[in-house]
Amino acid sequence: MLAGWGRHLWKRRCKCSRSAFVNPLIPEGPKEEALFKQGELNKGRRVAFSSMSLLKMAPSAEERTTIHEMFLNTLDQKTISFQSRILPPNAVWMEKSKLKSLEICHPQERNIFNRIFGGFLMRKAYELGWATACNFGGSRPFVVAVDDIMFQKPVEVGSLLFLSSQVCFTQGNYIQVRVHSEVASLHNKEHTTTNVFHFTFMSENEVPLVFPRTYGESMLYLDGQRHFNSMSASQTLKKDYLLKPQGQQPLETSVSQ
Image (cartoon, rainbow, N blue to C red; front, side):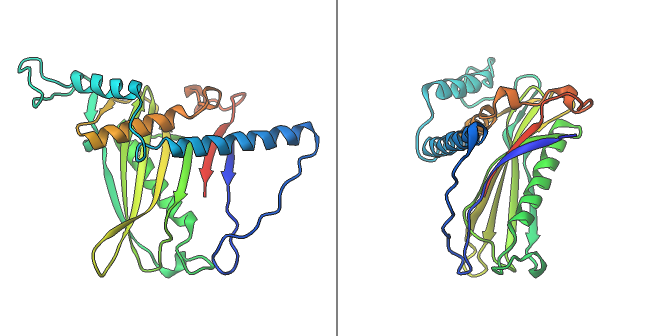
């Protein structure tokens, strides 16, 4: 039984730890040509998504309206003050959804380049993200999508790896979790980001809404909403898939490395 399928982006590296040439593909037949065109579309989507990052551009007018409406929904109507804020029913402040962990990067987790293996980092991030969704939703979550894992900086053996996980968007039974990993320099105590992970989970029960309190959290909310909406409707799992997988559409997982 097919349980899932995925789109993966890999980068070839030579023995000198630099990028290496990859032989071009020549599609043969209609099926391969369709897959090749889909790959080009996926590449364009990644480039467009990166160029519209909230770290580079301001939110759209629709997104700004969303954040302002959420802000108004948290104002205390009794005081009519911008400083007095309360949560609506069935809602949680985003800052209350955090979990953190620390990993000591031992030599047995190294790769052939004497750096920490990327699979180890992904597993630790997924486990913390899963625990965050479980703690937030109050039931065992199921992963729906893993989106755009970006390896920004290698992790050296012996590093202290700090992982911070946070629920940044919810809708119905779905929980969007962002996991941020960084290493700390032992000399100047500076923290450097190494990876950012985005996971979409589905809970057995409907989960509370998550509300940002600060502008930074509002940007995290919009970023989480973007990642959630990037999933195609035809690839979104239904609840009965978890209990009766026969005859349902397969799960898609998108991972970039």
